[in-house]
Image 1 (tube, one colour):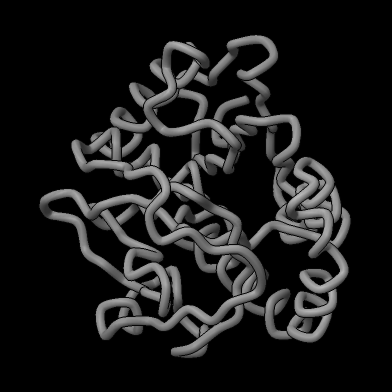
Image 2 (cartoon, rainbow, N blue to C red):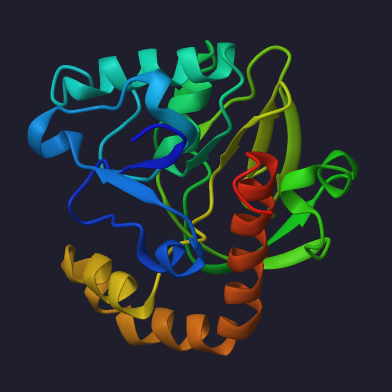
Length: 229
């Protein structure tokens, strides 16, 4: 479908979650982990790439990642609006020649992210507080490629958001999660299941701020793609 927002779900355990609530426009969700299918650039008005348990360079285990990184490079070159979330941000960095490092700056739970001066002036974060609540769940982290602009940091992870050009963004945090998703992720490892209620309680305590930020982020991205009036 031409002129449509396309969403790439890389992992059955990492769905678009509450992002769907903030999408008052036509959209298509692809599942290349299942069927290998990716949209052609001509179909895409804007592209969101979600997270996943795999690494950005795990192409041998997950061959669809090679084609996905090619698609990301094409989107950046063609100035197709792009938003990469967690793994999606790492894939953007890797596609543009930056390193993605495992077991560095790991974070779990509801944590504060701070906008840098560049982030305060960036369209994606328009109307978002300088310090805002996020949900984090990552082992890997991205470096910032040459020519990219670092937009946000946290106490544990200095690379939280970046922009390449004027239409491609990567974020390390998860604006899409729901309580159900958090509970599902905790259930995947016994070590995390022991902390599920603690993580959920912290998320509930910040849910109002978290959801307001997620909604605003999505609105800003869609308006940058001219998909909102």
